[in-house]
Image (cartoon, rainbow, N blue to C red; front, side):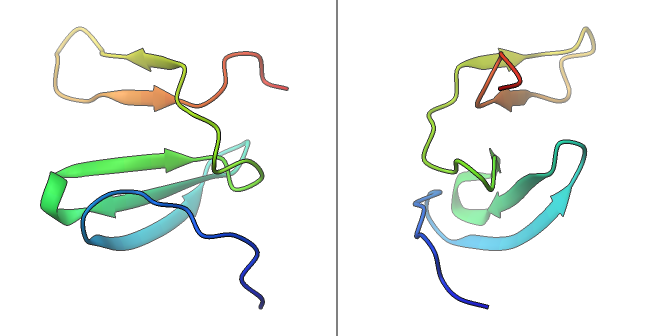
Length: 68
């Protein structure tokens, strides 16, 4: 493995999980009580969409709305 890029995700990133289709990286950011969602192919792209389900418990951000 080689480091290809360094991406800032907030104060004290704690863990990372790769999941989903298309594959995304989920990074827990402990000091911000947050989860960053990144596209591993384009981790520097800014988020452009957010969704909050009717129960208000979960929040999801998207870095792309086109699927391209």
